[in-house]
Figure 1 (tube, rainbow, N blue to C red):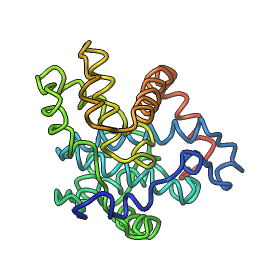
Figure 2: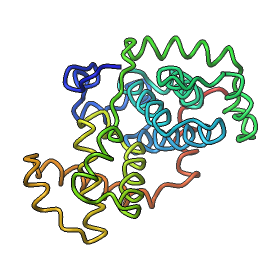
Figure 3: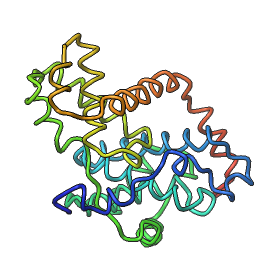
Length: 253
């Protein structure tokens, strides 16, 4: 892994929000809207988490897998790259990249256990074939930096490292992977935004601490608002809406 975020491929490939929100023309032809696009990606992030809980890998592996999945769909269509196969394959690839390797056959076993729907079913060869396609789609850039890396140190530095604040902040960071923030913003700013939200919720005064950091508070607050807006819009998330969005793709009948 690259030792420094600012010299890493992750930093060099950060995107503008407009680029992340671009629905591929092939998907548009099938009637997939931006809302559908976001819903499917959020559903697949949840799918990766469910699988990860079954195979017992660290949260960092989940975060890397979700980041791979989201990166893929800035370059490839869901029509060509079935999300129901991309999601477990990204978990498989991330487990190797994060040195917590999970066998493909174990993923196949738990997919069959978790989902009765045949459209989620796959075989080992499907995962291995999709792995090569994903590697190509990512241009073999597998480095991902996460907010977790600096979070503990930042909380300690702010004097906010009690159990309540730590758990709340980590929970908010986990939730950011249901969004595209990791493709757009440096991870330390995402972490600071999560600390800012948690400090407001727990009524902790962090004004002086943030001033001493000399970070762009407007940017931190903007990211915070994106997260809070997501929580509000997430109330509209339902399985029926996801299934309707996936139906438009009409994949793997």
